[in-house]
Length: 124
Image (cartoon, rainbow, N blue to C red; front, top):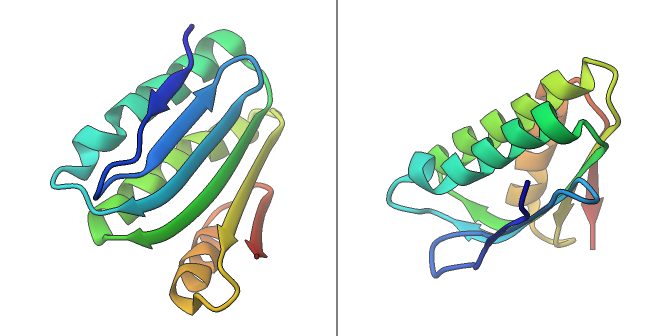
């Protein structure tokens, strides 16, 4: 299994997935023309990690903007991780937001309320 690295673009997140540690990081803005196409490698990486590695997962999200289709895709990513958690696996999701960014904070709180896994909303 390989790590996944996607460089941030003008309208896409930077993504880093490390199979040796289970660390998944996403940072930046997300309003790609085709969110499903952008997130597909992330779905595939997570599915492969869950099937083959079966180690702990820590996801750190530092997102400053999400459009509606990106929000849905990110929900699907976290939903996959939640299913993994429900199989008694170690999982932690950390949603970081700038202290004065109420919109991103609210999105993080909505995700937290909709999920049944360790999920922290952290201001910086």
